[in-house]
Amino acid sequence: MAKNLTKEVLEDWLENVRPLARDGKVADYIPALAKQDPDELAVAVYDLDGECISAGNLVCCFTLQSISKVLSLALALMDNGEEYVFERVGMEPTGDPFHSIYRLEQHAPSKPLNPMINAGALAVTNMIHGATPDEKVGRLLSFIHEMTDDQSIRYNEDVAVSEFQTAYLNRSLCYYMKQHGVIEGSVEENLDAYTKQCAIEVNINHLARIGAIFANDGKDLESGRQIIPRHLARICKTFMVTCGMYDASGSFAIRVGIPAKSGVSGAVVGSVNGFGGIAVYGAALDEKGNSVVGLKLLELLANRYDLSIF
Image (cartoon, rainbow, N blue to C red; front, side, top):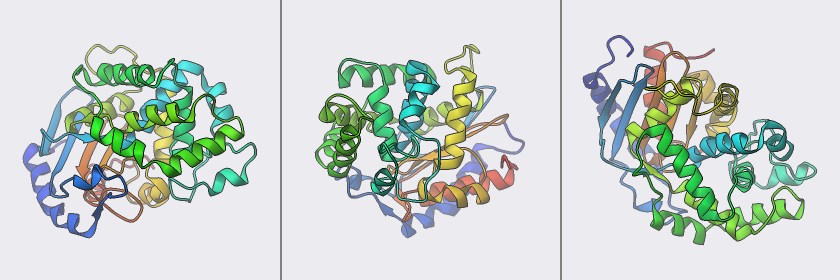
């Protein structure tokens, strides 16, 4: 663990940034997420020796939302290989909002720019092996169980239903890509799998451990077993740097400088080679869809312990 990083230090930092939650807004376009409490905050640091230090509400569970895009990408790459995946989804960052359809209309054959925007993530979910949505989600859950060493992790059914029923724009993205052959099969089944994927629930220690496994080049922290092939873990971390914080990824790279992925639940995971995984949670979001408290905590940690990869 980083020198002088203790539970007390994390608790102090958490209390110092707590007032920032008033500057953000809980995501309300998904009705189930509107119920989240912006005052529930948590942070965890999981080092590569398997030690975890955490502070805040450690029993609070939250949904992965867009953080699941990193995990589904890893699984799709393991299922299909790089050539297959990147024939259908690009590798370039975008300055547009994560739910934008604009870039799809500019690129033939409507190939999403990267796997971290909604269009790209929907295409990636379509590539995960499985005959049914539940089989796909079950395989993703098994993957997460393996990474966290916790078989109890499930998806939140209320959140999944809420997202599915209000996913009008994501349906549009899917139908547009189906028209151009980017995705195959039933749009509704793909959306079912995607919304359940986004609704997978973890706690702060789970998320920090996931970040640490990516920081450890895909190796399990205890057994040393290779859960994700090293080169695929590196691809995922690269996308976290270039596209992981929506259209604020560039400013985040300058201010914080670590591979990270956020979700509109208010969770953020960071992964730093040679250091470990960092997870933060605070449901109040800025205008880009990133946790206000989470961004500040990651900036404090990165600056204090010189974590920037640049």
